[in-house]
Amino acid sequence: MDSTAATPQTPATPAVPMAVSDQQNTALLDDTLTFLTSSKAVNSGPEGRTEIDRWLAVLGASERTGLAKIKQELAQLNDLLSNTKTPAHDIAEVLASLGAETAKVADEAGGDYSAPLANLSKQLIRAASTLSK
Image (cartoon, rainbow, N blue to C red):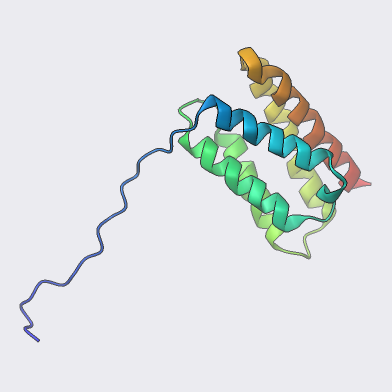
C-alpha cells in the first residue's frame, strides 16, 4: 500500500434541521398524552425513553426560543430512566419541573397548541405527584 495515498474519510453528516409539520406535532402531543394517561406509564422506563427521544428530536428541530430548559430536563429524565435504580423521587422532581416549564410554554403558545400543552403540563405534574408518594 502506498503510504502517500490519501486516507479515506467519512463525510461529515450535515446538520440539517428536521422539518416537523403541525400534524406531526399534534400526533406527538396526542401520543404523549395517551401514554401519560394510560396505566402502562407507571414503571415503563423504556417506553418513556422512547417518548423523550421523540420530543428531543422535535424540540431540537424547533426554532422557538425558550426551550433550552425543557431540552435539558428531558435529557436529564432520559438519563434517570436509563438506570433502574434511580429513586422515584428524583424522577418526580424532574417531571414536576418539566410540567411547570410546559405550563409556561402553553401560556405562550397560540392556536391549537395551548390547550394540549396545558393538559400535558397537568399530566406531567400528576405523574410527578404519583411517583413522589
